[in-house]
Image (cartoon, rainbow, N blue to C red; front, top):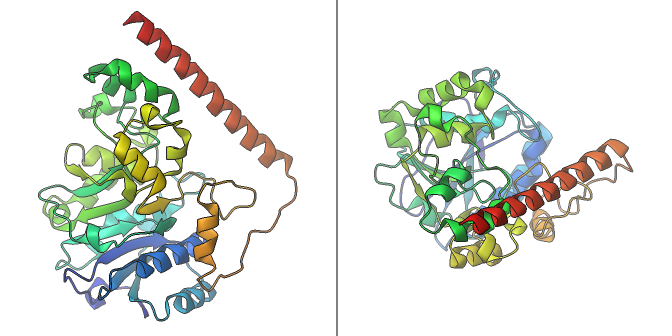
Length: 359
């Protein structure tokens, strides 16, 4: 069932332990991966469980809604739709594959009824391979959220983390492979811990009760607007700043980002070896991060085939991206990005070896 509404008072949600409430946000560009996200999440629920989805519609066409309805028929899932006013976020930065719909999650405590004290937030570019009820039932205590470390940029400032680590020499092995050394560039000015872990906002368990008590939505938007020149990774910047020291970790397997495949092995990865193995080989959720998505033509992803296996179970069965033909600009951009990445890795490896030699 898909029910479209514009008023939070009309939402009818069950807060029982076996009926996880999931919040998603999407626009027309993400309808196909959204179908995979919802289909896979509903298909992997334990027997007797029911998935309740509140979908924030950032601009989805009627034909796409028809395909989503067809996809979800017979599954243990209901979808209630809210169409928020996008003017609330229209002044915020967008780039690459990110639209203003990415910021709608920051309105969660205001859009959901007050009797909903928690919600599982899922991005619309996920492949869910485990029962999200496990997330719904976890204890949050006083934390604002639970989330998994961002495997691409695992620390607020990696240099600060490695500088204070008990075994900094061993940690140098992961330095060359992180995507961003300092995702919160102005952490000192903000007075937050640079050595702390940094989380990915694509999979979160949100403590809406605490959000409402501390007026978190307002603080998140204030953070984005007051620090415009420092914002990197959109909503994720504000969440990591405002929630600094006030979030709890999920096992990394709950958010397998693409970047995990950039680490040669567990010795070079900044997480525990056992957790690294689970994240690589037995993820609970595959997150198709970065602007290079498996539903784009010629994009290689280790889980590309798995994505299409699930897409073929939806109303979009058989769909594949059209070959746009050779475009010099696309070829040039892709290869320059790869060249820069290899150069950065090699430079950091050299720098790390110098550090080891000095120590």
